[in-house]
Length: 248
Image 1 (tube, rainbow, N blue to C red):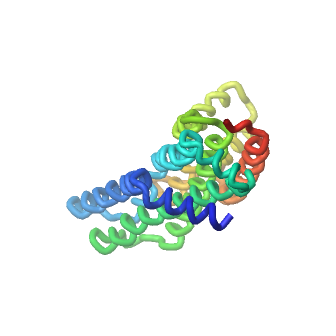
Image 2: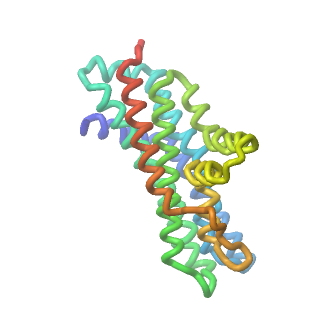
């Protein structure tokens, strides 16, 4: 496992794909900070401005990294060398998770850390609420990452990458089924366990004010629990399918 992780880290984090994928949100973060400074705005909410875009970026970055393993027969060669399929799956899982943590962490460092020095924060800035919002966002992004790894590991080629990239949109569009459901309880559960809507819920929590009050049916305390459940189930399912997959 350690050898696989060592190879993965070198391949994933020192390649052009990760530098470009990770650098893009940093570039946007710098632009946001400069825009705030120029227009006299504050930056306390900037860590959450790209929350909806990051799942798609994760799908592209992690998805292409894993799909390339299939294209280059890297996974097949790892199996031939004696590595277990579980170790291969988990090494890609850990690498992708770490990549997500680094990318979002750097984005927060730019927008809130450096941004607060350059542009400043408002007088009613709630540090505890912001940190909680960042941690909740991490839970959601790691959920998307786990689903990305699952789809890319059980499919060959770029099909898993395509699904992962569109997953944020697909989960958002799934709310159309609620039109045919009358139960308010089911709707409430759906809106609180769906990762796409969880992003909106975190933003509502962070922005909570008299002008934008947090709705009573929003339960942010559900996010860590649902994330843990989805990550666990998707990983177990992914390993189960990958173990039986015919790799040529």
